[in-house]
Length: 119
Image (cartoon, rainbow, N blue to C red; front, side, top):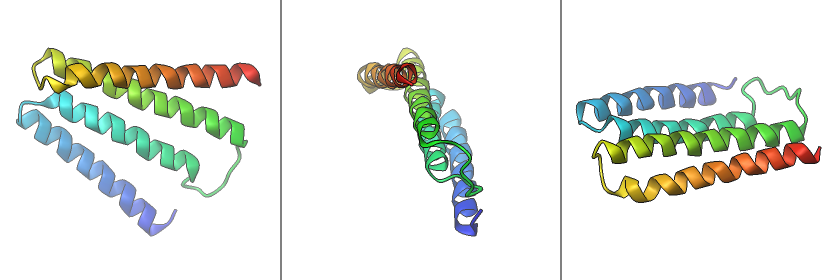
């Protein structure tokens, strides 16, 4: 693993923890968790596209399927946390954002299942 990549992943982990702590202290833990869930899925997607070990032992179809599932998890996780944020009064905008996040997540699940059934 390159030094730049390990630095970036470590920096992301530190910032994610800082966002969670700041959200908790600021009275908006659901909002902070939604952001961290969304961006964590993006980091995992980048690791799927370019594995840390540099060794590819999977087929491109398996990578694409894994990529879709991680994307779906990110949308669904952040959508569920956005629902929590809206229910606990962390901002009216979450009432509008949460359904979109959940819809995008369900679409990615559909595409992942559909692609798996075509194989």
